Length: 167
Image (cartoon, rainbow, N blue to C red; front, side, top):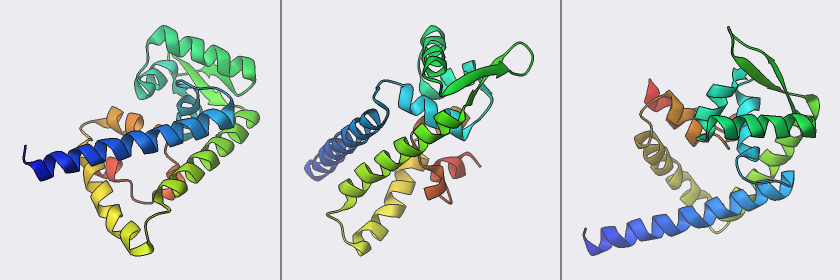
């Protein structure tokens, strides 16, 4: 790898870690819990009535781990199991769960705004097509969309590059 390419990759890696940690810290503070719980709430909100197996795939965790997570969401009053297709069990948010998702997304948005603050309007505009290209290149199948976008504020992304890469 060329020195300039190595530096670019290193800077990208450091920026990704820094931004990821800022978002993780913000959403965990907003809900008072970490791990897959914040992403589970946002994913269930985006895809209501999906099966536990579909949720497991989006979150990238084990089936027993997903069942325990759904148990916790139910105990908190944020989600409930419902009959799904066939023998599958679906998960839906309660009104309380939807309120928590709003807090999570607001915390995420604030963390990302802080990360972008050093950039001017023009630089932010220049960054958009670069990020779209990087995200599209990471997309190979439907589950990539659900996994990559598991913490996305979907109303902020009119033309999702991840979904676009699937077309």
